[in-house]
Length: 238
Image 1 (tube, rainbow, N blue to C red):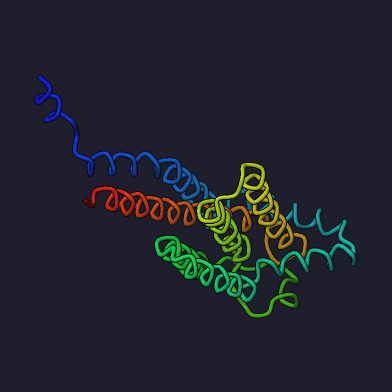
Image 2: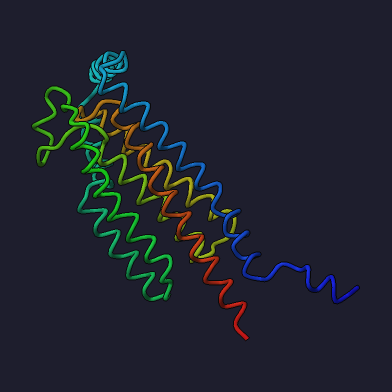
């Protein structure tokens, strides 16, 4: 009887795969939700649905209350989502992960940031939504409007950074909450700054958040899956 029970016990590798699938499920669902929201917004913009009218009205209403101090403040906030700043952040975090020899996290971090930049450029080119009026003087170079690059890449960078810090640094519960809250507030602030400065419509920013959510949680899920498989392989070694 005991031998029979031993034969029916599932091999360790199957348990590892099952645990990996369970661990990545929330990330996959979040990724699909982001993809669905992005698709809805993109389709509405391409077909010039009422969302475009709401965008224009919301932008006009917001700009009626802008101030020089507000412009200076949100210009500074916007810099935290600029390509140069995120590139520097990417190198710093990559160096940290190399020092810690966290190769799975390093791969996930690099794919998230580099892939996110490429994906954002492709989406802009495919949709080709014009920028709001009077946006040109505030732009360093020409690019299309949807999705907002600042919103999308900030979502990817700061959510992925939160995941890296929580899983590699392993801080206490209070600090973990602080890291995630800071990343969330900063990301939202960067997105709002793009609308306040008049370089994006609200739907551009929301689409950027949605696209960023889709990509970053896909990368996090892949990193978790690889990490669990790697840990399972180490446990099976004699």
